[in-house]
Image (tube, rainbow, N blue to C red):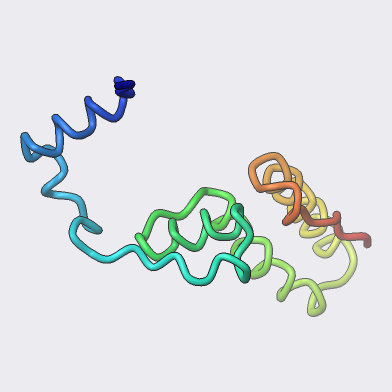
Length: 107
């Protein structure tokens, strides 16, 4: 019978109580209907439900907040903000999945 060495290590650690302090330990894992969530979306939903968010989500929130300020600015301040937003979008696009990438903001 084949046994995966990584699975054996995890099971041994779980028996030793190494995972007892985890925030999500013992909570049911709700995966939802499989036809609604593709595998990538399901991964991020599961991470979100367990309070583990990737850094690119924080970047997305920062970009959205900066875009809200954009209409009220004009001139040089607007150019600087657009440049800063585009830099964050570039970092975001490197970090996020291809299906969620964003376009740069034009002046």
